Length: 89
Length: 118
Image (cartoon, rainbow over all chains, first blue to last red; front, side, top):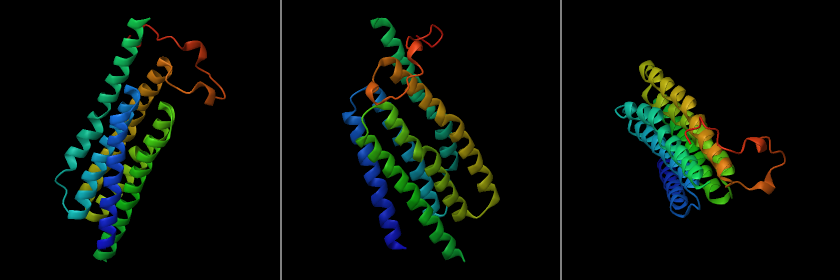
């Protein structure tokens, strides 16, 4: 049981660090948008995992709100990139 | 019985975490935006479903299951939206690897249409 918990922590930490590394070194802003989407999904998975490990359900509305609102960041980034492309042409 | 359910939920959490790790590795290893999107969608759908199953097994109440169904449905509805917008913007900006495409079905619609927010 304890070994399972430790491996869960290590795997989540490695995934978060690699995603943040892609956000830092992303060549274009779209790569950073994709990586920040993955980071947001990682936050959702971490909230759920913490609920399941500690046997409570207090952060469940946060999960729903993140799932509903988290899209708008990537959508607005995509539209901003298209707009900048048009003015350059 | 409860210990068995807790262990099963921990194993499900570990599977979801491994999916997040594969998405992060794919983000680092792949070379252009559409292939990074391909890697990024794995934890957004399957990883979250596994984590929600783990929460349901850990809480063992039907009200929690009803709330988690709503969470998964909202995520299933909104994850393709952002992926579509980002992939479309990547294609229009030309930040994709043209040589890795076998068929380019969007070739004649490369220009941003006037109604696309441009």
